[in-house]
Image 1 (cartoon, rainbow, N blue to C red):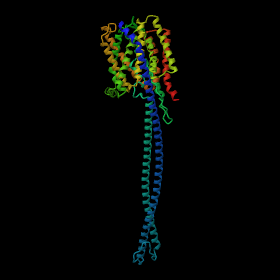
Image 2 (image 1 turned 90 degrees about the vertical axis):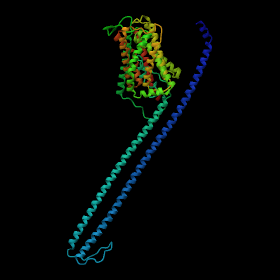
Image 3 (image 1 turned 120 degrees about the horizontal axis):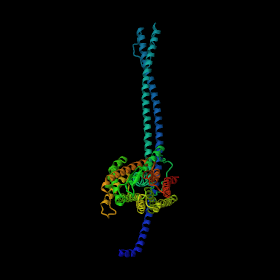
Image 4 (image 1 turned 90 degrees about the horizontal axis):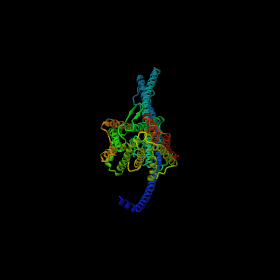
Length: 591
């Protein structure tokens, strides 16, 4: 051991110098990559904006041509209709003249035959005989005029029927043209809307390459919070991105109805209540120095003693229930979950697999450590100390992604630090109420928050795209494997599970309760983010420590000192300020 220290002391300056050089070169490469990607994205945005303007101009030209064609067609139809009417009148006049001539010739021949002076030669066309009038000339003339009137009436009736048929046919054709015009306008409107949606989707993708539908990190934080029922929806830290300028012609984003937002807030509050109940039930499973009074009515001694091995065992029992029911819930929430998982296995994407397994490992460590912390210190204090992870996440994002915190972010970090000190200080002033080890509990809560910050940072690395629900399902499965392997590894007696054979029924029942609460919280947080949005739901999630402490006081009669309550309030307000600042940041950039 001494020899190892000597060697390490000799090589330490060289290692430090090489590490600084490597870090400097990596930072330069990252800056160059950032500038390159930023330039390419700006060029793509400019090109898309130009194409969008061209498309809008083409659409306006198409509309103008359509209106001109429509007016020309109407003019041609009206002129054709007038010409056709004139042709009909001309034909009618010819027919009437011809019929009148035939009738007059026939009548005059009859009159001539009756008078004995019939015509001996044929009458040329256009000439009429002038016979000598007989004695009954007036009577014959009246009959002739009556027959002529009848013939003219019949001709006019036939003409009226033809005109009615032509008019009805013309009306049908005009109605068909109007229907085609409406269909054309609808198709053109659909084409314009589709082009606009595609342009907006391209802009949104360029603004946020790892979008909610493609990347787990940018989705609402519901799946992150549902994986660990003691962790809340308060502090998802996003990688900064350059805003894409929006043109005035682009439609505004749809605003959620107030009823939907109210429903989402109620669901988010219900999810926070379920998380608090989960933490209290977990505290109830772990034995204390003395049996705990439940609602002040009866005593419950607990099931297992606090320890690393027993925490692993509780986590495994809970995950057995989760893995039995989570596939059904995932299929209900996202029917394409199995297709995405099959593509994940077939892709062979090592970067994506390293992201999934790395985040699952950090989350597994965070779970085990928070269980250990809840077993040794009051559950409200443990969850409050766990909220150190926003500080680590913000600082890690600053180092890894260049996301410098704002003034509000720095104030929130300071407030969280002060609140953690105030919340944890009373725990060292005296023994833990349940008889646990205060040092182990506080250290485990701090380590749980740090490892959970590592989980958040790993999921933010853009190594690949996967929907949050299949991501969560694979995460659950990986944590289940990690828990099983950890219990199979031979360790010393202090870290191995210590379970009495008589408590197995209670342990199984506790695992079922914890698993059902996990899935119930997952479902509530998912729908809360859908109705109210992830940011509003995360603001409600900041009430987690306060609700946990409240339920612990009501159910287990765990009292906190005023200083600890003050620290818890400071942490809650600081984390809520970070969430509000994240919600208002896009609006400030847009304005």
